[in-house]
Image (cartoon, rainbow, N blue to C red; front, side, top):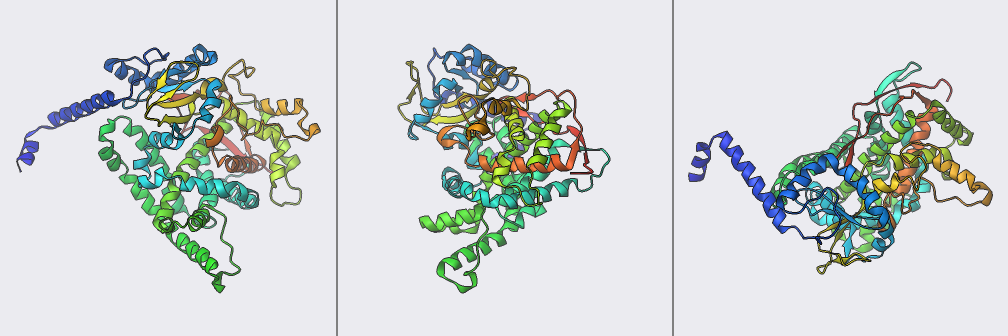
Length: 532
């Protein structure tokens, strides 16, 4: 009662002042608890001490890309790591040179952990509603086990969904030029195609389900931004409050998905028991089926609850929707900023290799699209939407020693690798800051790939120490082959059936912190081709 009277007596300015003081005090507590790094490590933009820490992390939002660029040429090319700010409540990141990538991949999981690093960065304990599910790798194991082996047989279904999604969005477009928002176009066509692999036929076209999962992914992104402005000591409270919207969107999606999960459980378990009703029935190949299979194989009955299966899908929805949409938008923007004959050359290639009898694209035909593949890989190189990649966090209580130095990184420090510098290094790429759609196609042709009968590792999903948009080593993205085929099939249908007007000069890239901000409102002109 006394507490309520005290609150009533305080004016709004005083309450606001108390809140600000509380947040400042929280950040001070966070700073005191941060692990301390060696004082003689090179730094870019990072200053030590409380005031230096605050100033560095304010400037982080405006200068992080510049620091990563400069650090690559000053230290990274000399084989040295350097420190950059990573947020008010985090120690600075250790940005490794690409020469240390092999060493990084050799470290055991009790020394450094990729899963824990990613979970911390995206605030998975709050955003994905159940910390016990997020910290377990069960869902990732199901993807690794079945996705790639099932992919060749799923290509016709993926192509059908690509055709359906594009026509649903652009069905009104005729032979006259029409303006569309490029971001909205890809945001409309990627989710149904992606969800054909995640939840299966039928439900992947359900408008209410798709709206809910897209809203969920955007809610996760919003919370990741907002939580950076609150002290970590308050995250257990603030995180749960902010993520109420995540819970709301998941409940909407779960309501639509529940009948699908229940029917799948009944069918798979009935078939396993020898029930005659399911003797000739085959479950769709999608993540729902794979999660159930893995749970039955491992005897994990708790994983067979519909609520658990539904929540297992959430991290995969988040990982596969907006990243694919952004990759696709940037690729098309790079393409439309090129001379018109670039798109013409790609379209000619598509016409030359597409199935002659009107059947579906085969895996072999898609892999023969060297120009299309090169244009996407080159966009991944030039228009990377993050400055660093391959996140790891030190897990060893005794720390981790960087080879060739006396620097020991304490537990809780994040290591990452300079993506921005490697992708724009003029010693690796000629005209490194220019988009050359056929850069990798010309390399493959120059080495006479076809004559030697060997496909060179320069395709969209081939990673190395200077090109790793899908990651590198043991923790490389397990869904990269699906994403590559998804982009190929969507690109094929769009370019064969629609004509796009080039945009001339490419809009300037915008960065906040370590991430690129999409051009949400950018419009392009297109029209339906009279003869595909």
